[in-house]
Image 1: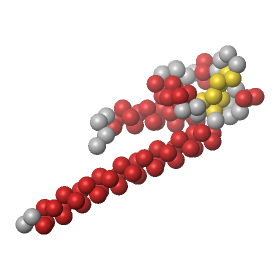
Image 2: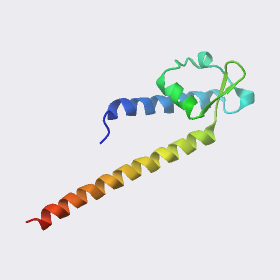
Image 3: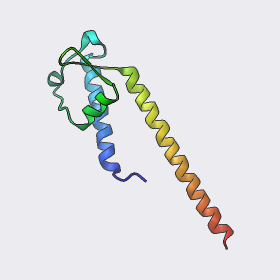
Length: 104
């Protein structure tokens, strides 16, 4: 179903690693913000997506911190979407099987 599952999985792993770096650095609030450079982060696709989802918040000119609540909400949303996709696929497969069995 997914067109490019390997690259998507890679981006998700990189996002999780970025979140881990912020947590390990203690940058989980505005007063404990840090910079991408201090964490050794390249601001690539995974980073930009986290910024777009407001998981990584900006403070001042270069300060960044992790919004852990938004990260957890994003993970919950992704799980819900994945479960919905799997459920739809199972329903389609069941429909095909029933159709094939009834057409005999």
